[in-house]
Structure formats: structure tokens, C-alpha cells
Length: 112
Image (cartoon, rainbow, N blue to C red; front, side):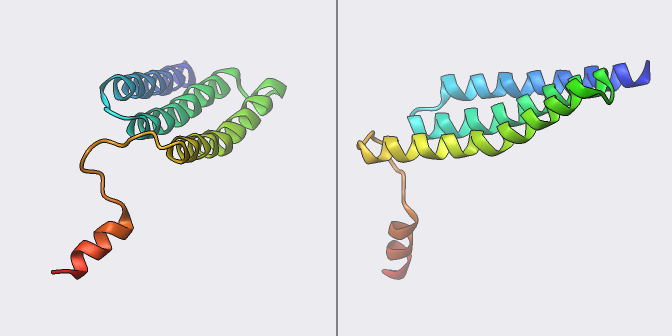
């Protein structure tokens, strides 16, 4: 009974992070910020949802497979987001106005 309640609470947190990711996808102005919001929220949301399923399921064969899925998503989702952002940058998809790169910020601060 207690384990089911804890599993439900973790599941609700996972759904919450998915909803925050969707809000970020709809509200942010360019592909880079949208990618950042969805990647962070989806990784954590999937992790929490799958972890709640593992708790509910108990220690069994399927829960080990779910654990492996968590590890795979934890490793592959940020890597894929980085590849997408690098591809978007290489084909000159514009960033939002006012974006400053680290190199530019360093040059501007040294000119003071």
C-alpha cells in the first residue's frame, strides 16, 4: 500500500516534468532553447515514470529491463540533443537575438 502511494507520487512528478517540457517547447523562441527544455524535462520525466513502474512492479525480470531502459535513455537523450543542436548550428538556423557566445563575452569584457 505504501509502495503504491510512493510509486503514484513519483509518477505524478514524472508527468509534471513532461508537461513542463511541453510548455517549454511551445513558449521558447528558437530551436536551441526548445531543444534544451524538452531534453532536460523528457529525460527526467521518463526516468521518474519508469522508476515508478519499477517500484510498483517490484524486483523482477521486467524491472531489470526497465532499469536498463532508464540507463539507455539517460545516456542517449542528451547525446541526441547535442547532435541535433550541432546540426542546426551547422546549417545556420538562427538563434534568438541577443545570444552571446562565450568567445564574444570574453572579448567584450576585455574591452572595458
